[in-house]
Length: 343
Image (cartoon, rainbow, N blue to C red; front, side, top):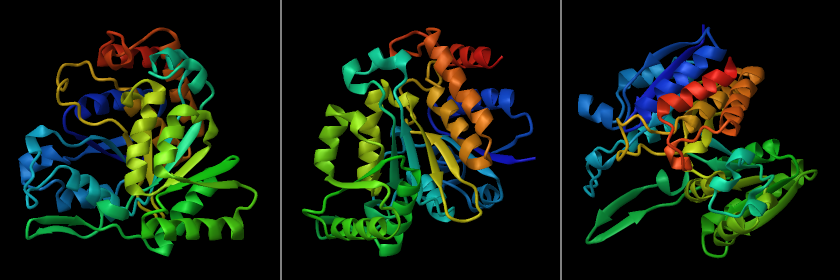
């Protein structure tokens, strides 16, 4: 029986994780779950954002389902402080999760929930492929003599493997996003992506775009994109921007994949939302859709994944609206609406 390492995390994480597990039980009865602490919850219990024991159990699992980590309780400007995000960074690094896939597909039932005009977002269907284990977030950093530094480093191998992921996922076109007019890492990025395209993927159209221009185009003409391929920090920012196409950050799922035999990680894009934690009003749909990605990419169960995604679509078409989408539905009511469509 496949084992899921369930990491509820902080804030609304435990609430949406519970919702996702209920829905998964309706389409995959053979899954077993082992819960582990991560993020602030682990700091409070163990003084570290993830323990070695939890990490060993996670590595032995078949997939990882994560709620969210972080919150103001653990915020600090002290560079030596233990931070919840360190648990997430260790998960990515230790599991070799270099490719983050973030599908962005506004649903017709939610076209009017987006701050953008309906005619701009209709038929948008893009995939953001973000490099996840390099760049500024993993480079050398520190403080000295009143100055702070963060180092952005990329190798040819790191760029090539994420570019290959992007080209393999594309239907027609890859838009590679960089800042090659300023950054040396971006110039290397553009060179490597171009060389790989010419050698192996000429049947896919390739365009290069600077990140500031891409950010504007993402709002002005989102239908133009098929696959957006980019480095760690740019991908982090652009994917959060893209969430507005769907009407809410609470709607976006994400999958983090590696090259080895270890488990992949699946989580919603949204954060811990500490202001609503414990109130039972969090939107669980991003977490439920992340569970669908787990079924598809983690276990090759396309039919079960499609059933879950279709149930979410129909629940929204039926009128269910969590608060972040302008409605009044609670977490439980939203979950029941999806379960009702599955039945």
